[in-house]
Image (tube, rainbow over all chains, first blue to last red):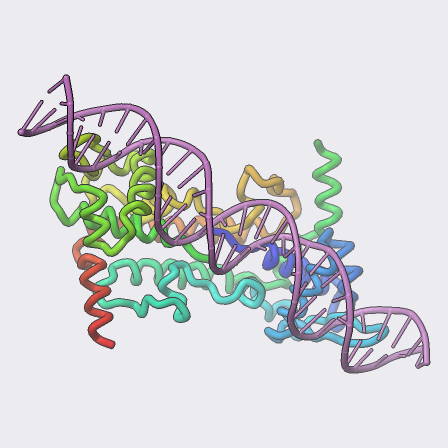
Length: 148
Length: 148
DNA sequence: TTCAAACCCGACCGATTCGGTCCGGTTTGC
DNA sequence: GCAAACCGGACCGAATCGGTCGGGTTTGAA
């Protein structure tokens, strides 16, 4: 019952872009280094974010990634769903599985409610808000390491 | 981002017990048949529920399982956490993993909030309430099958 | 006292997902 | 035309999921 590391990395990656200010472009390599995320993996994640329209890719030399929208208009929910796919708490909520919301299933309602609340909560937080109190991950990691 | 089938089965299994009335004992085999759950798998799940104190096992001939508490005092949250383990939305919330709630991590707060809400929502629903509108799963499945 | 019913524990298994890595291809700026 | 950067997808080892199975223990009843 967890989100994946990929979606977490996705958030960190986008926050890194957000901190650079409006319209800034950065390479995956650099973002990955600063956030302590394997660059090849982050590249894959950014491609998913690009497909979801959260980020724009600029190909060729001097290229990189830019936020497609201002960070106050990108929510945590959008990021995690772009990377992990839509949130379904129950196997049977996934339409590709067979459940079909059987009539008389008492579980559907509570889980649907929980799902709605979870998504609303994540949707309330924007990248702009998070960026305000988020330092680069690599710096935090070395700080934590030093503290031991 | 889902609960497992095992926790879903756990709820169905306990609801089956609840519908039998206070103090009733039933064998895994029978519950499994009525709820269309592989009995060996359900047995494993019931053992987890027994370890969590939600259910009491009676060994030997004529044995089976009984609810350890009245169904109005068993919540959905307890059942799913007994089977799936505690809910952690982020990898880093799991103390066995390495994260340690690094200072400056903007993600911790929103995810902690989401987790709290999710758990509260699941905790609001009791087996008694669910049982009131829950028919056995096998019956629902054959009904759904017939409808096609 | 013996037998069978029922749970207990843990090993195992195939399929899928996770977390990454890598490689060949394409686009672009210089 | 060359190098920089993204693109797509194949691949890989480890872990998890959804079960299954076999052998052991407890218990009631004949």
